Structure formats: structure tokens, C-alpha cells
Amino acid sequence: MKKYSKYILFFIAALTVSSCDDYLDVTPIGKVIPETLPQFRAVLTTGYSVYPQHKSLTEVRADELTLNEFSDDFIYYRDIYIWKDSNPDKITTTFQYQNLYTVIFYTNVLINEASKKIETSAERDQLIGEAYALRAMAYFDLVNLFGKPYNAATAASDKAVPLALEIDLEQAFIPQTVEVIYNQIISDTNEAEKLLNVTSQPKGLNYRFSKASLYSLESRIYLYQKQWQKSLDAANKALAINYNLIDLNATKVLANRYDSAESILALENTFINSLKSVSYASPDLIATYNKTTDLRYPLYFLASGSRFRIQKGGEDAQKCSFRSSELYLTKAETLLELNNLADAKTTVVAFIAKRYTPAGLSDLTTSVNAMNTTDLATFIANERRREFAAEGHRWFDLRRTSQKQIIHTVDGNEHTLIQNDPRYTIIYPANARLNNPNL
Image 1 (cartoon, rainbow, N blue to C red):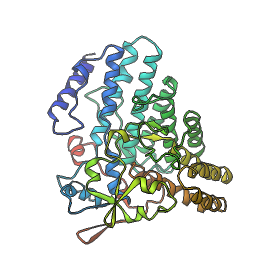
Image 2 (image 1 turned 120 degrees about the horizontal axis):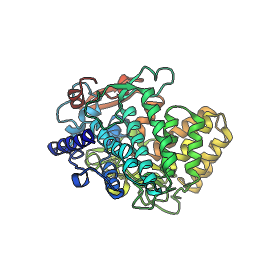
Image 3 (image 1 turned 120 degrees about the vertical axis):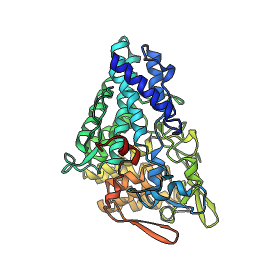
Image 4 (image 1 turned 180 degrees about the vertical axis):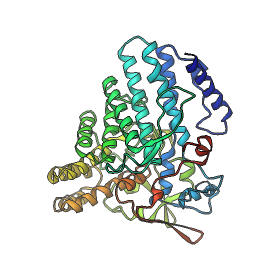
């Protein structure tokens, strides 16, 4: 208990002196060691509330945006945009490595202490289950930002991030391998699955994990690992709880809203206002849409002269980490990888029926039904790009698939991220390296 108390007090002090950082300017509820169920719930609520907005920064690195060099905020994103990671300008916005560990700290308090202090109940199990799920998600984001893409042949030697599972000031934070981190992520999701008993969270509380959002997380984890059957099984379990798709022919609303019928976990702001103000949709992204038949096009984009502003993001109502659209497209992709072409096509058609005009759907259905495996894989990948524009998926999808070449232009000069560029893995931020010589 003495070491635990010391750690809590140290952490509060660290938060206090870091008040210049929006994400670290948080103190645990009441500044006391939690003892009761409501106090532990308050700790986890804080953990949810400080989940960082790093998905927006990945969009700057990918091929979705063109940045406005004349914007006052351009300087904060310039070096991210040109993949200048090794020696960025000090004013450059930093990827939130430390903030994800802040989330992990709060989950560790729950995982290590709640079961000792709270009597057994469904509410206690749900709370601890959420902590395991949230920790798994934080490590999943860490390893996919700062570790190499999962490769079964090299994961045991590929360097990733430190593992911190205990509340211990004296532990050495030494980077583990991609395999070790993924094994821990899966261990955490397995523990969460034993404990979670809320099938789906009501609107307003759907920032919290439920069975549906845990299955969605598992489906994404296994997709990135290319464990196709496990990803498909998890997607099907989540779809058994929420299979709803908004029909854009009937309802012209953004499907990524927290109150959408598609919402499964509404935790992350994936396209922040400061980035919206400095960016336009890239011509490459705009070119992927059929401007006549794709119902997402007028919902997602607004013409601004010859360019297009992205209308998604920038408000709490659009917080989104998982929604049912992802499950449909993951299901289609995994079915295809499992050589089930017919069912993959059926799943794709069920999805696009809600995204295109009747005329567009008729033509696309004919086209999809005539596709071979390669063509359908390309179509599914393009549908992911269209559906999840500015939702934080694109950089990670590129990492796990083609790692294509991307060119960004600044001051008339082209900057190139070549195919399979090592910069598809982000280096640890300078402040993290300064604070931890083991990195």
C-alpha cells in the first residue's frame, strides 16, 4: 500500500506540473486512493476522458489531406505532414505517446486494486472488464503508432513499446517486442470478455466499453494480425448485437455520430477543429467518390472554391471509435481472405445498399458480382477509404497493407514517403526519449 500511495501522489504531482499540456492537465477524482465502487468508476471515467486525439495526427501523415500553407496553424503540423520525425521543429504537435500511458495508468489502478477493495458484483465485474478493454485499446494504439506493423515472421524481434502493468515507480520501462505487446493486448481482451456483462451501452454512456465494443476491438486486432477467421468471428459476434446501418437514401446524417444507430464505441475525436481549419480533402481522396451516386460525398465534403473542406469531426457529437460499418467491411475483407468470394460479395452489397443511390447501387451490384478476388479486395479497400475518411483509419490501413508511396508538397517542394518507408513507423517523441533512456 505504501508503494501504491507513493505512486498515486507522484502521479498527481506530475499532472500538476504538466498543466501546459491539455491532456495531462488532469488529476484523479478527489486526489485520494479509491476505495469504493463509485470512486473506482470515477477513476476509470477520468481514464476515458483523457484518451488522446492522435488519430487526427495520423491523417496528416496519410493521403487524405492537403494542408493550407497560409494557415496560422500550419506550422504545428508541417513536420508531421512531411514526415520529418527525427528532428522536428519544437513547435510541432507531438504524437501522444505519454498520454496513452496516462490512460494505462488509470486502467492499472482498476485492474490491480478494484478486485481487492470492492465486493463481488456484476457492477464490479463490468468496471474491471472495461479497464482491461481500455488498456488493450491503448496498447493497440501504441504498438500501431510506434511499433512495426504486425508480421508473424518478425514480431518476436520487432521493437515496440514498454509494457507497464503494475503500479510501481521503480520498474524499468524497457521496450518490448511487437509480439509481446500483442500477446498482452489479447490477454487483456480475454480477461475483459470474462467480466463484461453490459451488452451495449446506452447513448450518452457509449464512451464506455461493452460486449459489442470489445468484440469490435478484437475484430480489429485480429484483422491487423491477419488472423482472418478470428477477426471474422469477432465481427460476427459484434454484428449479432448491432448490425444496424444508416440508410443514407432515407436519412442524410453522418453515421459516425455518437447517437447514430451505427455507434458502438463513441470515445475518440478523430478529426480535431484545429486540423479542420488548416486542411482540405486531398484531390486523391475526392477522386475516389462517385459524385453523382455516392451519398456520402455531399455529407462528407463542402466545396470551398476549387477545394473541399471535410465536414466530419470537430465536435463531441462525432466522437467515434467503433461503428457497425467497420464490422461489415472487415467481415467482407476476412471472408475474401478465407476464399469465400460469394459471401464476401453478399456482405459488400448489403453495405453499399445503404451508401449509394438506387441507380448507383444497381450498377455497382452488377460490377461487384462480376469481380474476381483481386478486384473485390481493391473495391473493399476503397470502400474503407471512402467510408472512414477523417475517422483515423487510413494511416493504419496503409501500414497493414500496401504501405504505398505518398507525396506531399510544401513551398513548391515535393516530399516523398516511399513505399515501405521506415517512417510508416513513428519514432518515439523527443520528450519520451529524454525521460526514458531505455527507449
